[in-house]
Length: 296
Length: 296
Image: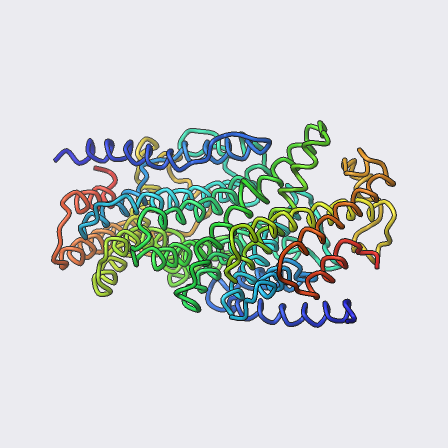
């Protein structure tokens, strides 16, 4: 299997699924719809919906009930980037080489487009009830989505991150919490929702959530390493931007060599943990390996 | 019935219900929880949850399943105010005599607290499934909540409002759409959800939604009238602030006298429409009358 080609193919398939759930641009309020659709269209590898779909398949899922959730989690990921890029937050004019939403539509519309995407994520996820009214996983999946996206997940992590930047009192423990919440929680949500909708047992769900958490952590450490060693092409942002922004990262605490060892160790653990399950999805394993070793 | 005293009493009861659904302030992310709780605590009459609860009672509802939805709609209303007050939007430092959320916690935390409230609204509403797992109204109520809060409702209205302020090309038709979406949609959502959860028929739901839409419109016209004629005490904001901000209102198009006539006419229609139903809630009727004639 040519993993990179396969990922590329599925990224395009998933982008089409997501596009089918985006709003038509119409009415007096069409600008916010345009801004929402622009924000999502700028997106990258559609990693969260891909992990969700592949975990759903791992447990034998074959229906379309997962699709509104795939669209929903990408909308939530996108809204978080739109708001992160705002002048009062990271103040970024570009993301992945394209203008950020507020840079195109103005700051007020950037705020509203983010709000609109978050709300529309739930509006979209609710359509799962019409697809499989009898699927007992929909309500638990909704609960997971809200928890992982909110104050006990992603927004919680963003909060600690914003506060730490202001106060400059980062500790290793706090950094770990930020990584687990800001990056990890939505990856956990993605894989967990896939498992739940496919009918995985509570024990299997636990293993998937732990796997996703480890993947998120390894992914984030890898990101810190690449910020020091990587190229603009691989990372999509200027090299050494963390240092320039006085950002404390995993590399700050552990040093480059130890960070590499830890990322390697955590990655191996994640794969082994997932492979302790009695089910297999070769592409999911390959995807996670690719994801963690992003320089390949 | 002393309506004002009764409203005051129920406002306090509802504030306690809402408070019981707010997050504990704990963990590294406690600041966002504090900011959320502060934002909600600044709130006023709890109008939307009150209308929801009374409509629920109108159709014979007597359970607690409505409570998470009451909390959810107040969180959504609150997040919209928090984001509306941001420097990039209306740039307000005070609301109801208290500092706005971003004025207390900073702009970044204002954005995140709004996001957190919107997300937590859904997290909260989902707890209805645990209260009455067999209530067939919960899923339809969730759909209404998302639709009325989003681009086809409140956020849509905010978008048109923001754009019109920039372009200064307001028309009567556009102003009507803004009022129906920005103010009306969430009132419609409030009453409709109450009706749905209590098991109202489709025809009854339609009448309730139309009633709420008319109440929202009369309420908004009344607000415009009071901006011209009212006192600081009644309105909670400086008199003539619309004119000062060059805001086009209903009074701009219709003139003061016609605006008063229209508000009166729409109010009477709303009450008559609701009273065409075979059910009665004396307090709900009194509440709506009080609400529309806010100078009493």
